[in-house]
Each structure stands twice: as C-alpha cells, then as structure tokens.
Image 1 (tube, rainbow, N blue to C red):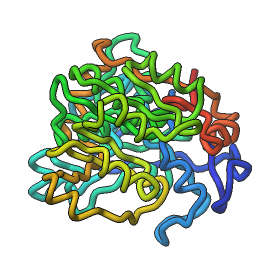
Image 2: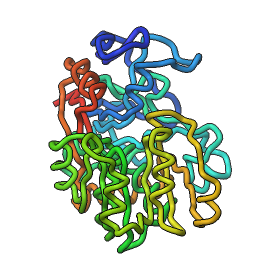
Image 3: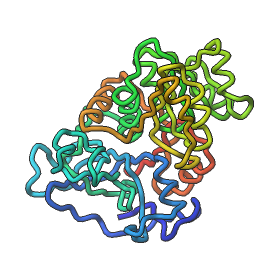
Image 4: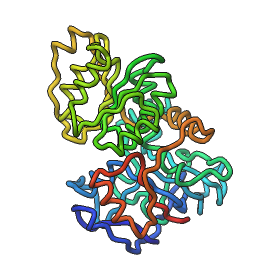
Length: 344
C-alpha cells in the first residue's frame, strides 16, 4: 500500500509517498480502507521531532480516519466488510478500572492512534473494532475524518471538564486550529458568548462565520486588552487554552473571579508560570483535558452526523500531495481541518 511517510524528522520536504507493507490485523481489530485522514498538531510534533525511542522509521502518522472495513478478525462481531466507519483514535488497555468505566483517556497506558507511526495517512490502517462508529448512509468521509480527535477533544474540554454554561463568556485562543475552531462551534451550540483570537483578517472572517461573537487579531493588537474593553473590565468565565507558555499568564489574568481555564495543548511550550495569588484569591480553577471518553466520542459524533455541528474543513489534498498539506500546516495557514483524501 501507499503511505505518506518520512524516514527522519525534519520539515514537510521529508514527506514521501512510498510503498509499505499492508498492516496485519490481530484479535479484535478491523482493517480499514482509508478514504480520508485529517491532520492534527500531532502531524507536526512527529515530523519535527524528536520522536520517542519506540518509534521506528519509516513512520507515517494520521489519527483522524474514516473509511470502509476491508477485513475483520475472526472474533469481531457486529460489523461487516464494506461498512463505512469513522475511527476513535483513542488507544487504551481496555481492562483497567478507568477503561471499564469508558474513561479511556484516563488509562495509564493511554495513547493516540498514529502517534507512534502506522497511522491513517496511508491506504489502509488497522483499528480496534470497539473504537469504530458507523457512518450514516452517504455521509461524507472527509467530514467524518475531520471530527473524531479535534471535536471530541473540544467537546470534553468544554462540556465535561470546564462545564461551560449558557450565557457565559468564553475566550478561545489559537482559534484557527482544529480543536479551537471546533470549540467556537460547540460553545455557541451551548449558548455562550464567544471571543476568539486568531492571526489574520481572513481567519477572522472564518471565525465569525463559525459563530464567534467577537474576533480579535493578535497580529495587530493585544487581544487580552481588547477582551477587557469588550467586557467592561470584567474578563471572561472560561479560557480555552492550547498555546501554553506564551499566553498562560495573560489567560489567568483575564479570568473573572471564580473563572476557569481549561487546557488541551501547549504549542509554545509545556512549562508556564502560574500566579498562585490569582489562583486562590480569585478562586480560579485550572483544568487539564485530553481527548475524550467513549461517551464523549459518541455524543459529538452524533451531533456531527445529524448536522447540528458541521466540521470545519480548511482544505482537501489527495494522498500524493501530502507534502503540500504538511507544508500548509507548517506555515499556519489553515483554519479548521486539513484532510487527505486517500480513496476518492
């Protein structure tokens, strides 16, 4: 089969389309003929390196996958060859207390499909059958691939971890990214007032179209000052963070008393300074969130399938143009999801 792989860490120029062995499925798994695979920041983390010692080259990533079942392990029931599915990219032991409760992202052995290689940026991928969800008849593979990782991450962070309420003010940073853009849509669905921060006039227009009430351009002004002005100095109830070190201090300062900050990423660094005085004096809550539970995945995918939430697609590339897709992501030009269409 063909895969968009790299033999060493580097930039988008290292992405090559080459023939690799088709994956072999084991007990409980399905072989998926990939129709679409969507990008996440994981693509860049893996490509740019360094990678974990367990990773072997050549490797190819891809966590957001939609396609058709091509083969099933003998012990798999409830599925048939030819079924159209999307894949929940959560990997877990399946036997611990947290897994049995459905809280797979809290498993000690939690991982993400494609993070260590052999992901969905290829013609076939092996996936656990219990992590599949059936697509409605005729549903777009591209839209289905755009949702699993980003939208369940945003759904869990906003609804389960931060518990956003109708009428609250929420500030979303890095609003052009897949999870943050999903956060705009989900926050509006829940009835919040949304302040979104992005980096260009074009992206501002897209953030407004996604539902943001106020969109701030960090390239031309200080967005935190603008939020203070727009809220008459009160700040916001919730900040949705993914930037990390570069914005953490300002994110904490923009919270109202009793406000919450939820983070699911750290694109500018994993270590940040927390103001303990603000934390206890203003009774703030700092929250971490990763992907989602099995219930989170089903809930957000049902909203996608019934049209309540329409995944935001930035661009679609054929598999043989994967290097161009990586390069667009590297330049930060996207708003929403970049998708590889593997099988039209």
